[in-house]
Length: 144
Image (cartoon, rainbow, N blue to C red; front, side):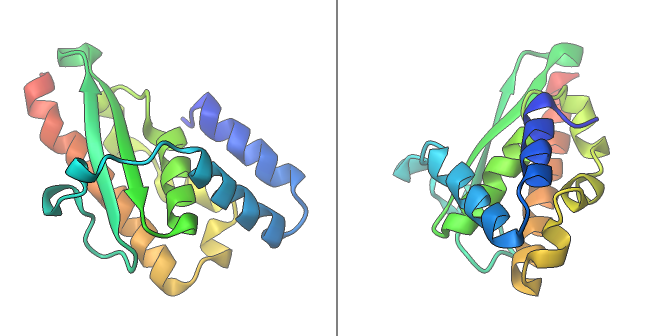
């Protein structure tokens, strides 16, 4: 169910031999992402449960069954920005109805993230996934 963009990240992770190289790659993914405008860094877009400051802003294109999910995000921590970039690759471009069905834990486990992130970062990652799913569920009634 993973997108082509996520598959590319997974292939790169397979190619990289050690976790330090993968960690640097995650940071590079975050650096390549456009920053979120200051006006969107508000309590309503902030993700609770993350040690770092994290903001996620949904962007739904289309209506009804054709609605497509996307989001922009940002963080004050480079590694977390990279995790947001990975989540964008996993979720952006999916039909709105498919977002809650993505097994993010299994997909992210393919990258070995579950083995190498601190407990705090893992909790934050779970909070971001839950926020993304909630945003998709909230948008679904207007899409159908």
